[in-house]
Image (cartoon, rainbow, N blue to C red; front, side):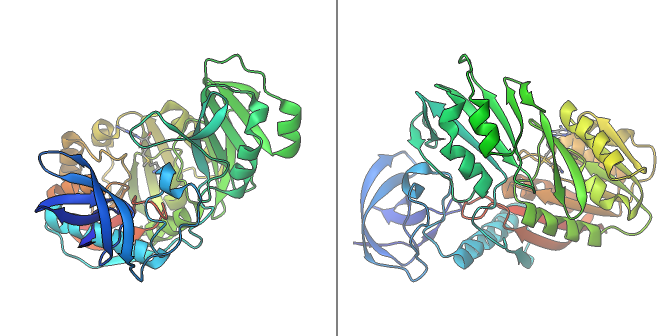
Length: 398
Ligand SMILES: C[S@@+](CC[C@H](N)C(=O)[O-])C[C@H]1O[C@@H](n2cnc3c(N)ncnc32)[C@H](O)[C@@H]1O
């Protein structure tokens, strides 16, 4: 019998087996457990939980019957409030260790940590639908995903009407429960449109990048802002938490400032800050996303935005006007060295850095801290019951 010491950043319990760090899924701190070693490397071991002898009071029954096999969620055996504590600790430890930043973190909860995802990607193998088990090609068959919106789950029940044998399928759902579906497959496709379009509000079906039914894009609405989104454009997956992000960003834009929205996607934050700013520049590398952004500018009557297609790390330097605020929302890999240096040279008064990867955030903050003071850090629970977290930092020029 062994006592679990703490959780790692991926929600795995940590024990020491013959003095070697050992990670164990589904075990919680202070639990007394029996385990079995399943993997050993030079640096660590992995173990399987055999029996819980003394249970943690933070433990709860996972709400999803596929939880232990699927691997998409990592924290369903923890009570919701404790998942937030874990994420806060994770962000705080990473920022302290890698950015030498010790600051209070404000946590923004997800209003409803179930049925929040507006996008789900599934695999179909030999006619069966599910998720691929992490780091494998093994399909875990599912008939619903309880963190996805109901309209997505309703479609999963009818997935057989797509008549696909082997494919990957991404389902997006908007404010009105309309669906935009993208399929990648080399199968000959024989979709039963009658059944699917009668039972579901399908706006479009895209097969291998070609619309084969309806449109290849749809409209979503958050906080009265209209967003056209193409099947392959990035869009935030949790509308409630995105709205919270909007409020924080708006509250940090000074009237009449010039704003650069780097990695702007479909122009999401540009649209939101437009009416509080003198001028907004949005830069994004995906062509369809910029085409969406140009439509979004028109739909929301935001005359003061210029969108530019290109690498934000390189293009930001080409903005000739003095920039007051830079909004940064890069992909997981964060900024490049060139991007960071450009921003330090441009010296905006304020930087609003939104990140979905605390490690690259910490790396970039360490550099930005040379000229900026980190005023405020938020943790937003965008990806409830997974170990992923979204954070937002407000930086002011020293
Ligand atoms: C995390 S998303 C943020 C999108 C947007 N801010 C939003 O909230 O919808 C990151 C975006 O950066 C884009 N991207 C990735 N690398 C880029 C680069 N080097 N330059 C500009 N955009 C890039 C992606 O296509 C994606 O739209």
